[in-house]
Image 1 (cartoon, rainbow, N blue to C red):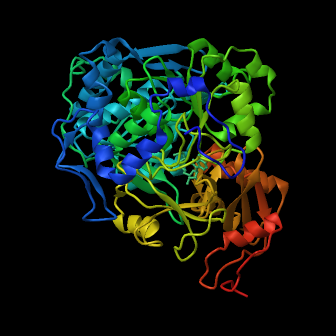
Image 2: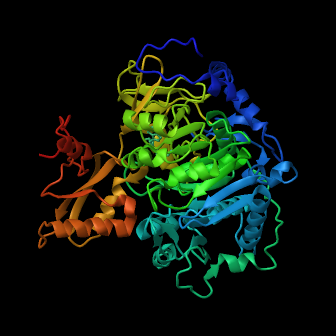
Image 3: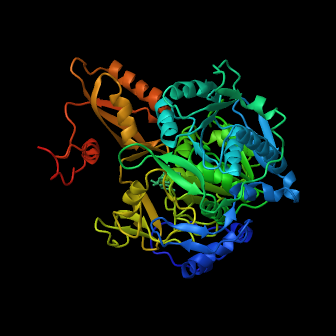
Length: 631
Ligand code: WT7
């Protein structure tokens, strides 16, 4: 590795200390092994986990792009997250350390977590939940979100977590599409010193969701909430019932049985339910977290995302538990009560690995070095970045000020659909600030042009993935045609990521951004369609188009171009009302930065809004090919 020659750009090498500590020293050898024998590589990883019955086949591509992994095997991800530790010393290890925003603390050993998951699983069963049923989870960052997810998985129910920052329209649409029988929520959560009233939002959404029979509510904030008799139950009352015993058998499932669906936005239309399975997903995230963040027994791992996004599913909940690690969760805002909250937590809990998004780094950077400098951050040994490209200034600050120049930054590129890290370094890989380096073991990525032909190094194009991987999405729940259409039809045989990127002469990949109707705001993935439909649900708006424009902290900010109905006049007051309207319907992250009132929107002759034209105009760039534009 050390004698590797680089021809392009700045390179940051790992120190001797980092290399000495790393479990995997020879990246090239492992990459070669996986390239030569993809199935052998993944089978070897899978052997490190426990199966009720081993697989007949590692990869079944007979129905591609509906790939299957570990077919014939019997497994349950929860068995590997919890059950298998109960007979070893690890039952006494901390699985979860949780800190609430007001300062309350709860910890769970692997024993305690397993016990409460069993208790709650028994409740779900007693309420008639069966294998394959969908359950929507809409919760703040509290330990019970982890317990709820694991309890569902344990009995073979399919969880559909909706991020607690979403509001009523987003929640309702996702409950309805998944046909969930149950919603698990909390009265509220703490954020920035205020209560986010989640149960109220559930009540509002359920007015239009007939499939839901039961709502279970965790008491977190303690404020008054409405409880509907016969439908609503308190979590703590149920857990106290005699049937909620601490023992519950784990359902033996097929490797390809669904584990969860998770909604994400894509090209046009409503959010799609990305489906992941027990077997392949388990192997993929176990392996990636093990090699990329090199999780070891003395580590305290903090993935500062929300469990409601794929980052949280894979690397707050399942990945760390599969690795027998200690995972840390903080409920609230990084700046509450002061901008050193995160740094104080790292010091107090001795966090060794911090994994967060560039937007968070940029946000905290604004407060200056003095806040982190007050704290001893020497426990950190690795850092991570995810969600959007990290700019060089943020990279430097993260590396020097937070990591003390000691901690390599794992810039991990992946997606809800990929389930696991896809382009990422490991600790021994020389880094280039802003690049996710190279594809993970067994993967091959390529940059192609409009026609699917590879472009020369250094040129921008569509990022595609060429080999299947175990944690890949299996389909879009209830919409397999859309799965084929959106990911596999544009470049046959290759997975289309929806990102544009470049590869440099050293084979390192540089992500540029989305090429579809997705806007990455503060690392959150939002679809233009949902924002636009929230806007046109306001009586003043006839038509709307949303685009993302560069923003210093958020990466991108939402700009909405609106055509008013007759009788309405543009005003700052109306613009503010519209921003507030989107916030109430979709959630705070979807609130547009700016509303532009216009008379016309650029459209194709078939009536599709040309958002790229709006964007080019706003940025003062060449609008490109407009041959399909009406007049
Ligand atoms: C999109 C996927 C699963 C990670 C959380 C986001 C962007 C993600 C990086 C990165 C540059 C990144 C891409 C991707 N993205 N990680 N390290 N560098 N861009 O998952 O919400 O499904 O979003 O996030 O645009 O397509 P997601």
